[in-house]
Length: 420
Ligand SMILES: [Cu+2]
Picture 1 (cartoon, protein in one colour):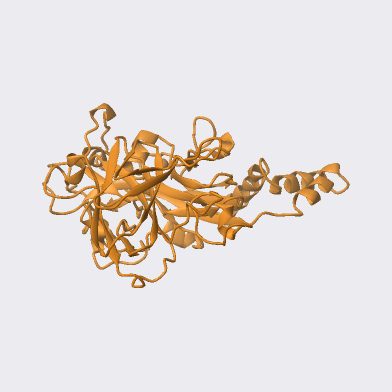
Picture 2 (cartoon, protein in one colour):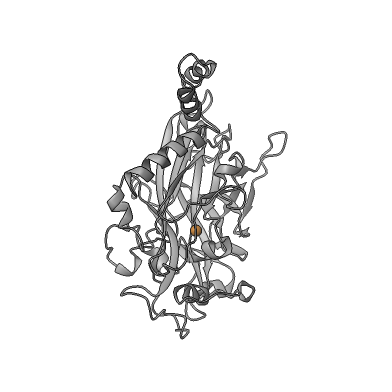
Protein backbone atom coordinates (compact mmCIF):
# COMPACT_ATOMS: atom_id res chain seq x y z
CA UNK A 1 0.00 0.00 0.00
CA UNK A 2 1.29 3.44 -0.93
CA UNK A 3 1.29 6.36 1.49
CA UNK A 4 -1.38 7.88 -0.68
CA UNK A 5 -3.77 4.92 -0.32
CA UNK A 6 -3.08 4.69 3.42
CA UNK A 7 -3.89 8.37 3.86
CA UNK A 8 -7.10 7.98 1.90
CA UNK A 9 -8.02 4.87 3.87
CA UNK A 10 -7.53 6.66 7.16
CA UNK A 11 -9.70 9.57 6.05
CA UNK A 12 -12.50 7.29 4.93
CA UNK A 13 -12.18 5.19 8.07
CA UNK A 14 -12.49 8.20 10.35
CA UNK A 15 -15.57 9.32 8.44
CA UNK A 16 -17.21 5.88 8.61
CA UNK A 17 -16.47 5.48 12.32
CA UNK A 18 -18.50 8.64 12.74
CA UNK A 19 -21.66 6.77 11.82
CA UNK A 20 -21.63 5.41 15.36
CA UNK A 21 -18.97 7.38 17.19
CA UNK A 22 -17.26 10.64 17.79
CA UNK A 23 -14.42 10.55 15.27
CA UNK A 24 -16.73 11.33 12.36
CA UNK A 25 -18.24 14.31 14.15
CA UNK A 26 -14.74 15.61 14.71
CA UNK A 27 -13.83 15.07 11.05
CA UNK A 28 -17.03 16.73 9.82
CA UNK A 29 -16.62 19.63 12.22
CA UNK A 30 -13.00 20.18 11.23
CA UNK A 31 -14.04 20.49 7.60
CA UNK A 32 -16.64 23.12 8.55
CA UNK A 33 -14.10 25.19 10.45
CA UNK A 34 -14.11 26.69 13.93
CA UNK A 35 -17.22 28.39 15.17
CA UNK A 36 -19.50 25.74 13.66
CA UNK A 37 -22.19 24.48 16.07
CA UNK A 38 -21.00 20.96 15.25
CA UNK A 39 -17.59 21.65 16.79
CA UNK A 40 -19.18 22.24 20.19
CA UNK A 41 -21.11 19.01 19.84
CA UNK A 42 -17.92 17.08 18.97
CA UNK A 43 -16.29 18.38 22.15
CA UNK A 44 -19.18 17.03 24.22
CA UNK A 45 -19.22 13.67 22.42
CA UNK A 46 -15.51 13.03 22.88
CA UNK A 47 -15.43 14.04 26.56
CA UNK A 48 -16.03 10.50 27.88
CA UNK A 49 -14.39 8.05 25.49
CA UNK A 50 -15.06 4.36 25.94
CA UNK A 51 -12.04 2.06 26.27
CA UNK A 52 -11.08 0.94 22.78
CA UNK A 53 -9.68 -2.38 21.62
CA UNK A 54 -8.12 -2.56 18.16
CA UNK A 55 -7.55 -5.77 16.22
CA UNK A 56 -6.05 -6.07 12.74
CA UNK A 57 -6.96 -9.12 10.67
CA UNK A 58 -5.74 -10.12 7.22
CA UNK A 59 -7.67 -12.32 4.78
CA UNK A 60 -5.77 -14.59 2.39
CA UNK A 61 -5.35 -18.21 1.25
CA UNK A 62 -2.92 -20.95 2.29
CA UNK A 63 -2.30 -24.62 2.90
CA UNK A 64 -3.20 -26.72 5.95
CA UNK A 65 -3.11 -30.38 6.92
CA UNK A 66 -5.71 -32.98 7.77
CA UNK A 67 -4.46 -36.19 9.49
CA UNK A 68 -2.08 -37.99 7.14
CA UNK A 69 -3.20 -41.56 7.89
CA UNK A 70 -6.65 -40.98 6.36
CA UNK A 71 -7.58 -42.90 3.18
CA UNK A 72 -6.59 -40.96 0.04
CA UNK A 73 -9.36 -39.71 -2.30
CA UNK A 74 -7.53 -39.24 -5.62
CA UNK A 75 -7.17 -36.73 -7.10
CA UNK A 76 -8.84 -34.51 -4.49
CA UNK A 77 -6.99 -35.38 -1.29
CA UNK A 78 -4.12 -35.18 -0.51
CA UNK A 79 -3.95 -32.27 -2.95
CA UNK A 80 -0.96 -32.85 -5.30
CA UNK A 81 -0.33 -29.08 -5.43
CA UNK A 82 0.18 -28.86 -1.65
CA UNK A 83 3.63 -27.88 -0.34
CA UNK A 84 5.53 -30.05 2.17
CA UNK A 85 3.67 -30.66 5.46
CA UNK A 86 0.30 -29.73 3.93
CA UNK A 87 -2.46 -31.51 2.00
CA UNK A 88 -5.47 -29.16 1.80
CA UNK A 89 -6.01 -25.71 0.23
CA UNK A 90 -7.83 -23.19 2.44
CA UNK A 91 -8.81 -19.54 2.88
CA UNK A 92 -8.54 -17.89 6.27
CA UNK A 93 -7.87 -14.94 8.53
CA UNK A 94 -4.65 -14.10 10.32
CA UNK A 95 -4.13 -11.79 13.29
CA UNK A 96 -1.65 -9.15 12.07
CA UNK A 97 -2.19 -6.68 14.93
CA UNK A 98 0.94 -4.57 15.47
CA UNK A 99 2.74 -5.79 12.34
CA UNK A 100 4.40 -3.39 9.91
CA UNK A 101 3.00 -3.07 6.38
CA UNK A 102 5.85 -5.25 5.06
CA UNK A 103 5.24 -7.90 7.73
CA UNK A 104 1.52 -7.94 6.90
CA UNK A 105 2.21 -8.33 3.17
CA UNK A 106 4.50 -11.28 4.00
CA UNK A 107 1.49 -13.18 5.44
CA UNK A 108 -0.08 -13.48 1.97
CA UNK A 109 -0.61 -17.20 1.24
CA UNK A 110 -0.33 -18.09 4.96
CA UNK A 111 -3.97 -18.30 6.06
CA UNK A 112 -4.87 -20.12 9.27
CA UNK A 113 -7.93 -22.21 10.21
CA UNK A 114 -9.87 -21.63 12.40
CA UNK A 115 -9.55 -17.86 12.52
CA UNK A 116 -7.96 -16.23 15.61
CA UNK A 117 -10.14 -16.62 18.73
CA UNK A 118 -11.13 -13.11 19.84
CA UNK A 119 -12.66 -11.78 23.06
CA UNK A 120 -13.95 -8.32 23.94
CA UNK A 121 -15.41 -6.67 27.03
CA UNK A 122 -19.06 -5.62 26.98
CA UNK A 123 -19.61 -1.87 26.42
CA UNK A 124 -16.14 -1.19 25.05
CA UNK A 125 -15.41 0.20 21.59
CA UNK A 126 -13.91 -2.27 19.18
CA UNK A 127 -12.16 -1.51 15.93
CA UNK A 128 -11.39 -4.43 13.65
CA UNK A 129 -9.33 -3.54 10.61
CA UNK A 130 -9.47 -6.07 7.78
CA UNK A 131 -6.78 -6.10 5.09
CA UNK A 132 -7.36 -8.20 1.97
CA UNK A 133 -4.02 -9.70 0.91
CA UNK A 134 -5.44 -11.57 -2.10
CA UNK A 135 -5.02 -15.26 -2.95
CA UNK A 136 -1.50 -16.49 -3.76
CA UNK A 137 -2.73 -19.72 -5.40
CA UNK A 138 -5.52 -18.00 -7.36
CA UNK A 139 -4.31 -14.60 -8.63
CA UNK A 140 -7.14 -14.83 -11.18
CA UNK A 141 -9.76 -14.62 -8.39
CA UNK A 142 -10.46 -11.04 -7.36
CA UNK A 143 -12.71 -11.94 -4.41
CA UNK A 144 -13.23 -9.42 -1.64
CA UNK A 145 -13.39 -10.36 2.04
CA UNK A 146 -15.49 -9.04 4.91
CA UNK A 147 -15.98 -9.59 8.66
CA UNK A 148 -19.54 -10.51 9.62
CA UNK A 149 -20.12 -10.81 13.36
CA UNK A 150 -22.74 -13.53 13.33
CA UNK A 151 -25.67 -13.04 15.68
CA UNK A 152 -24.42 -9.68 16.90
CA UNK A 153 -27.45 -7.40 17.22
CA UNK A 154 -26.12 -3.89 17.16
CA UNK A 155 -23.97 -3.53 14.09
CA UNK A 156 -25.37 -1.09 11.54
CA UNK A 157 -25.48 -2.55 8.01
CA UNK A 158 -22.26 -0.78 7.02
CA UNK A 159 -20.32 -2.75 9.65
CA UNK A 160 -22.28 -6.00 9.28
CA UNK A 161 -20.04 -7.42 6.57
CA UNK A 162 -22.78 -8.54 4.19
CA UNK A 163 -21.34 -7.25 0.90
CA UNK A 164 -24.72 -6.98 -0.85
CA UNK A 165 -25.91 -4.58 1.89
CA UNK A 166 -22.71 -2.72 2.65
CA UNK A 167 -19.20 -3.15 1.25
CA UNK A 168 -16.46 -5.74 0.84
CA UNK A 169 -12.72 -5.12 1.09
CA UNK A 170 -10.98 -5.38 -2.32
CA UNK A 171 -7.51 -6.87 -2.71
CA UNK A 172 -4.76 -4.58 -1.45
CA UNK A 173 -7.07 -2.37 0.59
CA UNK A 174 -8.28 -2.27 4.17
CA UNK A 175 -11.41 -1.25 6.07
CA UNK A 176 -12.07 -0.70 9.77
CA UNK A 177 -15.25 -2.05 11.34
CA UNK A 178 -16.60 -0.41 14.48
CA UNK A 179 -18.54 -2.34 17.11
CA UNK A 180 -19.73 -1.72 20.66
CA UNK A 181 -21.09 -5.02 22.00
CA UNK A 182 -23.98 -4.71 24.45
CA UNK A 183 -24.81 -8.39 24.95
CA UNK A 184 -22.34 -10.87 26.46
CA UNK A 185 -22.04 -14.42 25.17
CA UNK A 186 -20.42 -16.68 22.60
CA UNK A 187 -20.52 -15.47 19.01
CA UNK A 188 -18.78 -16.36 15.79
CA UNK A 189 -17.41 -14.30 12.94
CA UNK A 190 -16.91 -15.16 9.31
CA UNK A 191 -16.25 -13.69 5.90
CA UNK A 192 -19.56 -12.99 4.12
CA UNK A 193 -18.16 -12.60 0.59
CA UNK A 194 -19.23 -15.59 -1.59
CA UNK A 195 -20.03 -16.94 1.83
CA UNK A 196 -20.89 -20.57 1.02
CA UNK A 197 -17.41 -20.87 -0.50
CA UNK A 198 -15.41 -18.62 1.84
CA UNK A 199 -16.95 -20.10 5.02
CA UNK A 200 -16.30 -23.65 3.80
CA UNK A 201 -12.76 -22.69 2.82
CA UNK A 202 -12.04 -21.69 6.43
CA UNK A 203 -12.86 -18.03 7.09
CA UNK A 204 -14.61 -18.73 10.42
CA UNK A 205 -13.71 -17.96 14.03
CA UNK A 206 -15.02 -17.55 17.57
CA UNK A 207 -15.55 -14.27 19.41
CA UNK A 208 -16.63 -13.93 23.05
CA UNK A 209 -18.18 -10.87 24.69
CA UNK A 210 -17.33 -10.77 28.40
CA UNK A 211 -19.96 -9.39 30.79
CA UNK A 212 -19.49 -6.18 32.81
CA UNK A 213 -20.24 -8.37 35.85
CA UNK A 214 -16.61 -9.53 35.61
CA UNK A 215 -15.66 -6.25 37.31
CA UNK A 216 -17.73 -7.26 40.35
CA UNK A 217 -21.07 -6.00 41.63
CA UNK A 218 -22.56 -5.15 45.00
CA UNK A 219 -23.40 -8.84 45.49
CA UNK A 220 -20.67 -10.63 43.54
CA UNK A 221 -16.87 -10.45 43.64
CA UNK A 222 -14.94 -9.62 40.47
CA UNK A 223 -14.16 -12.77 38.51
CA UNK A 224 -14.88 -14.78 35.40
CA UNK A 225 -18.56 -15.08 34.47
CA UNK A 226 -20.17 -16.11 31.18
CA UNK A 227 -23.11 -13.72 31.55
CA UNK A 228 -24.50 -10.95 33.79
CA UNK A 229 -26.29 -13.65 35.75
CA UNK A 230 -26.58 -11.72 39.02
CA UNK A 231 -26.32 -14.86 41.12
CA UNK A 232 -22.86 -16.21 40.27
CA UNK A 233 -24.29 -19.30 38.57
CA UNK A 234 -22.25 -18.62 35.39
CA UNK A 235 -18.89 -18.31 37.19
CA UNK A 236 -16.08 -20.42 35.79
CA UNK A 237 -12.38 -21.12 36.35
CA UNK A 238 -11.41 -22.14 32.81
CA UNK A 239 -12.92 -21.65 29.35
CA UNK A 240 -12.49 -23.57 26.11
CA UNK A 241 -13.90 -22.54 22.73
CA UNK A 242 -14.81 -25.00 19.99
CA UNK A 243 -15.57 -24.06 16.40
CA UNK A 244 -17.19 -27.05 14.69
CA UNK A 245 -16.89 -27.21 10.89
CA UNK A 246 -16.82 -29.79 8.13
CA UNK A 247 -14.24 -29.90 5.33
CA UNK A 248 -15.32 -31.03 1.87
CA UNK A 249 -11.94 -31.87 0.32
CA UNK A 250 -13.27 -31.93 -3.26
CA UNK A 251 -14.38 -28.30 -3.05
CA UNK A 252 -10.99 -27.25 -1.62
CA UNK A 253 -9.23 -29.12 -4.46
CA UNK A 254 -11.41 -27.42 -7.07
CA UNK A 255 -10.61 -23.97 -5.65
CA UNK A 256 -6.87 -24.74 -5.86
CA UNK A 257 -7.19 -26.17 -9.40
CA UNK A 258 -9.31 -23.41 -10.97
CA UNK A 259 -12.56 -25.37 -11.11
CA UNK A 260 -16.02 -24.59 -9.77
CA UNK A 261 -18.07 -26.56 -7.25
CA UNK A 262 -21.75 -27.53 -7.29
CA UNK A 263 -22.54 -27.01 -3.59
CA UNK A 264 -25.69 -29.15 -3.78
CA UNK A 265 -23.30 -32.14 -3.90
CA UNK A 266 -22.00 -31.22 -0.42
CA UNK A 267 -20.43 -34.32 1.11
CA UNK A 268 -17.84 -33.54 3.79
CA UNK A 269 -14.59 -35.48 4.02
CA UNK A 270 -13.27 -34.25 7.37
CA UNK A 271 -14.97 -33.02 10.54
CA UNK A 272 -13.00 -30.41 12.44
CA UNK A 273 -12.83 -28.78 15.86
CA UNK A 274 -10.99 -25.44 15.73
CA UNK A 275 -9.73 -26.36 12.24
CA UNK A 276 -8.18 -29.70 13.22
CA UNK A 277 -9.42 -33.31 13.06
CA UNK A 278 -8.68 -35.90 15.78
CA UNK A 279 -6.02 -36.82 16.83
CA UNK A 280 -4.56 -33.40 15.86
CA UNK A 281 -7.20 -31.83 18.15
CA UNK A 282 -5.04 -32.89 21.12
CA UNK A 283 -1.84 -31.13 19.98
CA UNK A 284 -0.90 -27.97 21.93
CA UNK A 285 -1.68 -24.39 20.89
CA UNK A 286 0.70 -22.89 18.35
CA UNK A 287 1.62 -19.61 16.68
CA UNK A 288 1.55 -19.31 12.86
CA UNK A 289 4.80 -17.31 13.06
CA UNK A 290 6.67 -20.27 14.62
CA UNK A 291 7.15 -23.81 13.31
CA UNK A 292 5.63 -26.15 15.95
CA UNK A 293 6.84 -29.60 17.04
CA UNK A 294 4.44 -31.05 14.44
CA UNK A 295 5.15 -28.70 11.48
CA UNK A 296 1.93 -29.87 9.74
CA UNK A 297 -0.08 -27.80 12.23
CA UNK A 298 1.67 -24.41 11.86
CA UNK A 299 -1.43 -22.81 10.31
CA UNK A 300 -3.92 -24.67 12.54
CA UNK A 301 -2.77 -23.17 15.85
CA UNK A 302 -5.83 -23.69 18.08
CA UNK A 303 -5.83 -26.70 20.42
CA UNK A 304 -9.05 -28.41 21.51
CA UNK A 305 -7.49 -30.25 24.46
CA UNK A 306 -9.28 -29.47 27.75
CA UNK A 307 -7.06 -29.53 30.85
CA UNK A 308 -8.37 -28.73 34.32
CA UNK A 309 -8.21 -29.66 38.00
CA UNK A 310 -10.76 -31.78 39.81
CA UNK A 311 -13.44 -29.42 41.16
CA UNK A 312 -12.80 -26.65 38.60
CA UNK A 313 -15.79 -24.98 36.97
CA UNK A 314 -15.19 -25.34 33.23
CA UNK A 315 -17.00 -23.32 30.53
CA UNK A 316 -17.29 -24.86 27.07
CA UNK A 317 -18.14 -22.33 24.36
CA UNK A 318 -19.49 -24.37 21.42
CA UNK A 319 -20.21 -22.88 17.99
CA UNK A 320 -21.06 -24.48 14.66
CA UNK A 321 -20.18 -22.86 11.32
CA UNK A 322 -20.33 -26.07 9.34
CA UNK A 323 -23.36 -26.85 7.18
CA UNK A 324 -24.61 -29.83 9.20
CA UNK A 325 -26.00 -30.44 12.69
CA UNK A 326 -23.73 -31.82 15.36
CA UNK A 327 -24.55 -33.51 18.67
CA UNK A 328 -21.69 -33.16 21.12
CA UNK A 329 -21.41 -35.68 23.95
CA UNK A 330 -19.22 -35.98 27.03
CA UNK A 331 -19.20 -39.41 28.67
CA UNK A 332 -19.23 -39.47 32.46
CA UNK A 333 -19.70 -35.73 33.12
CA UNK A 334 -23.00 -33.87 33.54
CA UNK A 335 -23.16 -30.80 31.26
CA UNK A 336 -25.27 -27.78 32.23
CA UNK A 337 -26.39 -25.73 29.22
CA UNK A 338 -26.59 -22.12 30.45
CA UNK A 339 -26.72 -20.20 27.16
CA UNK A 340 -27.91 -20.54 23.57
CA UNK A 341 -26.98 -18.21 20.74
CA UNK A 342 -25.41 -15.68 23.14
CA UNK A 343 -28.50 -15.56 25.38
CA UNK A 344 -28.57 -16.62 29.03
CA UNK A 345 -31.29 -19.22 29.54
CA UNK A 346 -33.62 -17.34 31.86
CA UNK A 347 -37.37 -16.94 31.89
CA UNK A 348 -39.00 -13.50 31.90
CA UNK A 349 -39.26 -13.67 35.70
CA UNK A 350 -35.58 -14.48 36.01
CA UNK A 351 -36.02 -18.18 36.69
CA UNK A 352 -33.06 -20.21 35.45
CA UNK A 353 -33.92 -22.51 32.56
CA UNK A 354 -30.60 -24.27 32.47
CA UNK A 355 -30.72 -27.88 31.31
CA UNK A 356 -28.53 -30.76 32.50
CA UNK A 357 -27.60 -33.28 29.82
CA UNK A 358 -24.73 -35.31 28.43
CA UNK A 359 -25.43 -34.33 24.80
CA UNK A 360 -25.65 -30.82 23.36
CA UNK A 361 -27.19 -30.41 19.91
CA UNK A 362 -25.93 -27.53 17.85
CA UNK A 363 -27.04 -26.48 14.37
CA UNK A 364 -25.20 -24.43 11.75
CA UNK A 365 -24.81 -20.82 12.87
CA UNK A 366 -25.71 -21.64 16.49
CA UNK A 367 -23.73 -21.40 19.73
CA UNK A 368 -24.09 -23.00 23.16
CA UNK A 369 -22.53 -22.17 26.53
CA UNK A 370 -22.03 -25.22 28.71
CA UNK A 371 -20.69 -25.48 32.27
CA UNK A 372 -19.44 -28.52 34.13
CA UNK A 373 -17.68 -29.19 37.40
CA UNK A 374 -14.59 -31.30 36.75
CA UNK A 375 -15.02 -34.75 38.33
CA UNK A 376 -12.38 -37.12 39.73
CA UNK A 377 -9.01 -37.10 37.94
CA UNK A 378 -8.97 -39.01 34.67
CA UNK A 379 -9.43 -38.66 30.92
CA UNK A 380 -12.93 -38.12 29.52
CA UNK A 381 -13.93 -37.95 25.85
CA UNK A 382 -15.78 -35.06 24.20
CA UNK A 383 -17.04 -36.12 20.76
CA UNK A 384 -19.70 -35.87 18.08
CA UNK A 385 -22.29 -38.66 18.34
CA UNK A 386 -22.50 -38.94 14.52
CA UNK A 387 -20.27 -41.85 13.50
CA UNK A 388 -19.33 -40.18 10.17
CA UNK A 389 -17.97 -37.21 12.12
CA UNK A 390 -15.66 -39.55 14.06
CA UNK A 391 -13.71 -40.64 10.97
CA UNK A 392 -11.12 -38.96 8.74
CA UNK A 393 -12.14 -39.35 5.07
CA UNK A 394 -14.38 -42.24 6.16
CA UNK A 395 -11.53 -44.28 7.67
CA UNK A 396 -10.19 -44.95 11.14
CA UNK A 397 -10.89 -42.96 14.28
CA UNK A 398 -10.79 -39.20 13.79
CA UNK A 399 -12.96 -36.14 13.27
CA UNK A 400 -14.69 -34.15 15.98
CA UNK A 401 -13.25 -35.68 19.12
CA UNK A 402 -10.99 -34.46 21.92
CA UNK A 403 -10.12 -35.24 25.52
CA UNK A 404 -10.93 -33.62 28.85
CA UNK A 405 -7.95 -34.37 31.08
CA UNK A 406 -8.77 -33.82 34.76
CA UNK A 407 -5.81 -33.57 37.16
CA UNK A 408 -5.82 -33.65 40.98
CA UNK A 409 -6.71 -30.35 42.68
CA UNK A 410 -3.97 -27.70 42.51
CA UNK A 411 -2.03 -29.37 39.67
CA UNK A 412 -2.82 -27.28 36.57
CA UNK A 413 -1.92 -23.56 37.02
CA UNK A 414 -4.56 -20.84 36.61
CA UNK A 415 -5.66 -20.29 33.00
CA UNK A 416 -4.35 -17.12 31.35
CA UNK A 417 -6.39 -17.26 28.13
CA UNK A 418 -9.07 -19.38 26.50
CA UNK A 419 -8.00 -22.90 25.41
CA UNK A 420 -4.67 -22.54 27.30
CU1 LIG B 1 -13.60 -14.06 2.21
